[in-house]
Length: 437
Ligand code: GLC
Image (cartoon, rainbow, N blue to C red; front, side, top):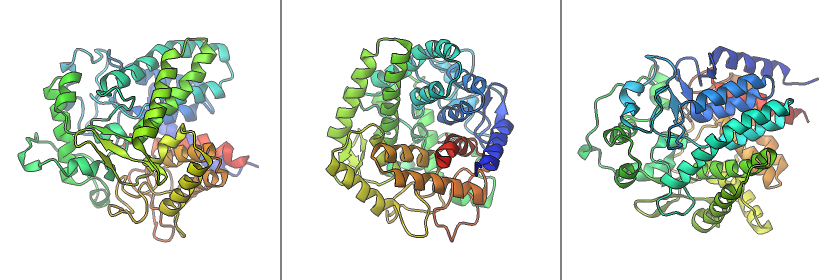
């Protein structure tokens, strides 16, 4: 008997409640639109029980793809007063590249879509329908990767950068503190704005600080003032980071595209080049012999030595020697495992910036645990993969489908952020069968 039947049933309920027409919002109140990588994880889950929902999710996301290939972080399919900044603030119509059919934000997010589509293919029971769908998606996916390698890689290093913490998906990560600390808020012109994410006293404590939010808004304002012109932004943007999570995901998606291309009998020469070049560059520029990958700030030309769990994501595609594998295992256990705590925190225990309950600065997030479990499998560490999955399930069983969780088992009293969070539900659906095996 499947021990997780009831949890999976509730997870499907969460997704059903958050579904709006042809897409699924991340949560009922805090996030009322379609978010890019959230939808990717959600589509993976739909592929387990209703492929038509997965098709819809991906197609409605890509309906907002820009002409230059960028896939936006948020698609504003409908009006809402619950979230700031909305379409009126982004004003992406200033760019001739933005789609006219539907408004969107003007930045992107971790490009999970290649491996989302591969997951859909693996779950498909109607290969001819899947083939027709993938044939439509392939040029869109290639255009997205092409955008990243063309516009986000000024040094032609095959390490595309992010230009806003929201692009990294881990908004408030200490990986970004280094760049923010060099910006002098008093001398920056910040437009007036009103946050909508601080509706409770807990939120005030758990969500990003005002000064960080000021900088998020400063960057958005810089992009819109420059009409989302790629070249100008590349010259003017003070935040350009080669982020190991974003790059690790990109290369994992490249790898998935090689398999998709084979299924479609399409030439994958370009994808192979991207994959090889990024694999080489991750090793030569970001790899840290201590057992992880550093971020890199393109402006100060410095490595960012902060041990978030993002620093492990390039292992999604990395070929390790036996010595490197052992070093990785040691570093992971030392940094991210601790008695009485769930695996695994978003920031290594003992890092100065560690905060057990603040957004992306220590708590456990289910999507990161999922990706790390894939890293562990690849690194032939199945027990560590299982531990990550089991701990994710325990958090949801104890507290519900929250956005993120305290890793301290005895301190934790409830989940953090918003409840009924779609990707937390998606992660349960995707991984339930691996726990039954
Ligand atoms: C937060 C998360 C981001 C996510 C979004 C919607 O901003 O940091 O990763 O995509 O919420 O769920």
